Amino acid sequence: MNVAHLMEPVPPGDWQTIGLAFVGIMLLIGASEGLRRSLGWPEEFTRKFVHILVGVMMFFIPILLDTALPMVLIALLFIVVNLVALQ
Image (cartoon, rainbow, N blue to C red; front, side, top):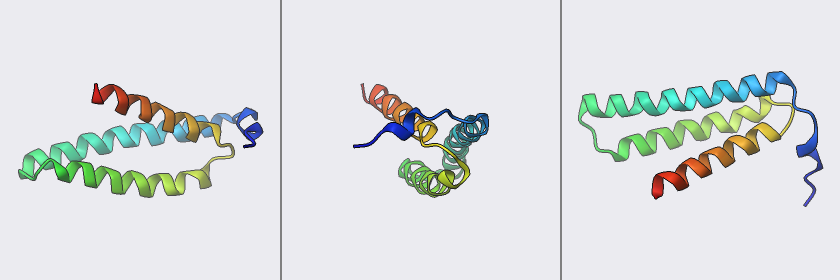
């Protein structure tokens, strides 16, 4: 597997884009949970809603990035967060 492209310098714009995506995901989670509680919907709503919208967002994010490293790091961050949440 060739991972040399992960060692390329990352332009500041990529970090800003991935930072905005991260903040957007956190806001999306909070908004969907608030919506679920206010409307009395089941907890399954939050999970499905967030997964669908984050999937669409992540589909388009690579168009805005010049390098792959920020996407790899945000994926690893969410893996760690999910592992900690399962404990």
